[in-house]
Length: 215
Image 1 (cartoon, rainbow, N blue to C red):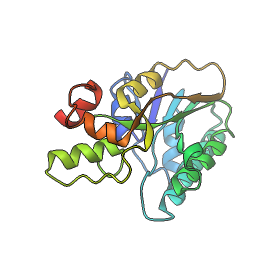
Image 2: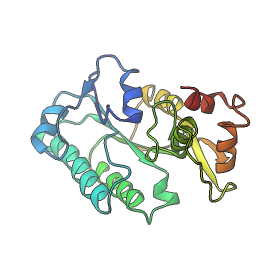
Image 3: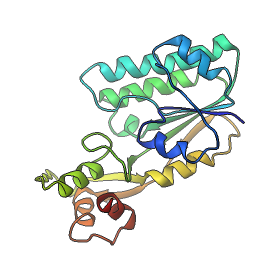
Image 4: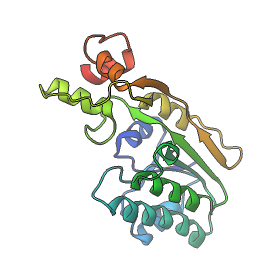
């Protein structure tokens, strides 16, 4: 089985790349249909991870919708039906009014225009290599703490659901496709204050979080 990955240079994609033997790595521009057609032509499964998370207003929608639309259009033009595994976010439920949440919801609808689709709705993802001020509050805290910067917590009791990138990637790499549908990935609910404590006064009590600051 030839497995393709978009967004393999990103946080989750870089981990997934190492879990798959000889993956087909998308090298072009997802906004260029010809690049996408060339990529999808020989794939039996595609992990679609590429997309902007944080950008100036309007850029997330403009970039991600075109990229995902081109992916599905290329399948129709190439007359191929690979398995498509898309990484969505639980923000489509938690924060659907945001540009990111709305964009993910729209991408989900586009993905369902193909024959074999699976949508992973995932919580906040953290781990070594996470990009501060972009991927998660864990990466941001770890960066600020290791660079001597002030950490500001507006609401320490606010809770979020988190999953370690290695745990998520294991689920992705080992997924057995049986039918189209959703996979709701469960994580660990922690408060923002707890996250900070696990990276400071309680460092070591949560080994997966500790790795982020010890790296």
